Length: 368
Ligand SMILES: Nc1ncnc2c1ncn2[C@@H]1O[C@H](COP(=O)(O)OP(=O)(O)OP(=O)(O)O)[C@@H](O)[C@H]1O
Image (cartoon, rainbow, N blue to C red):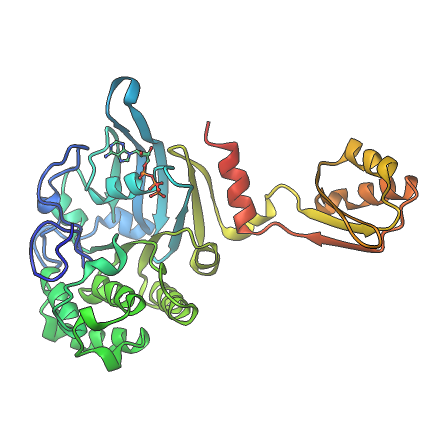
């Protein structure tokens, strides 16, 4: 997948559809057939039942094992979830959790051993052309575009391969360029752009043909803060105003927290949490309390340890700083223990868990 300058060859294409040119060792599908349907082509109408129910992506019981015998790896283990049309759903998980295999299974680039995938109600196994007709994917970030072509030529090219007359969507392209702050670079070859700008061109290319469901893998990787915010703002706008469905895999918790309506957390091949960011934070195991006092001697420390996990003890010039795992509900219990031990806190502050803490907790517990 290294063809960056020329048009053609084996690669993952950012607009519309992911394309591989033959089965690979890992059981990847020859998905050319799954990807070449024009959006105005035959057999592309969304399933009426699902369109009405608002489900853009439905994954049921997907399982993928690589290799056999002692070397076999259960990369995706009986995963099911649904993504509502017009929502933004994040996929989080540590390295090796199975995220890429899951996304590739949904996109038809890997053939699952078991399970079904429906996009807008259409089973990807039964009618791949129809299922993937309005699906876009940015799996390789900045490497997706044709670097010899200008930014606008890329958008036109990707609209064309999606089956859309590029002249008919010229206004859409202008809008995309404007909103992603790329207008002034429209006639510049992509190879001359910075990495962050290339990343934005990739996203614009994915959207150039009017994709309705997009899969984005680490879309903000390498972007500066401003570009990342521009991209996040545009994703939110596209979802809210245009009904775009976005499935986004990222290690950037800020992005996930800002744009996602829902988050799937994956660990060891399984989904270990599927909820809104707010609910995940609410359900998170307690926070941390930091106490500083000159009275925290060995006896007081032992008394606290009897009731609460102590994660850090730090000697200060004038006393001791203690970090204790305790939620808001435990706070009064901790204050009682301190008072009984004769400790008057000089400073006391609570630290609520953030998404990163929730993620670490969930994936430490593991999926099985
Ligand atoms: N083609 C393959 N052949 C054999 N094992 C594979 C193959 N692809 C992935 N695996 C294994 O499947 C498991 C899941 O890998 P996968 O790449 O899906 O995880 P990931 O969550 O995307 O990780 P990362 O965040 O590091 O990209 C890992 O143990 C990996 O080594």
